[in-house]
Image (cartoon, rainbow, N blue to C red; front, top):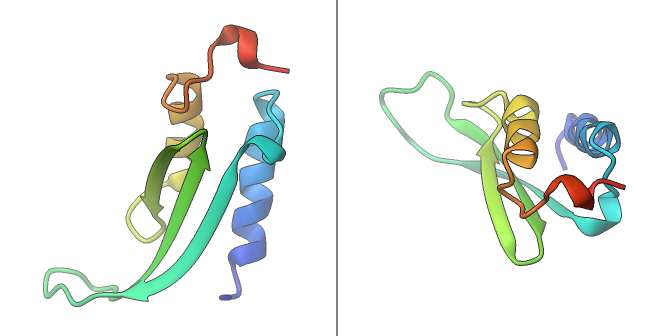
Length: 87
């Protein structure tokens, strides 16, 4: 666990709440990893994988604005959520 994991989970829950969805419908996995890329300044990575009904998407914390990307994916139906699915 890294120091920002609770913040990531809080952002995740806030996004779902804002969109009328329950965190119980999703699974979030946060993993630390590192890779070497000479073109990057940052070599440590945090991967956030979000899953719903066998649909997975992985967000790289170091290279995306993952809360914005996740919320856009929700609104664009990536996780098979339509207008009638909001609770």
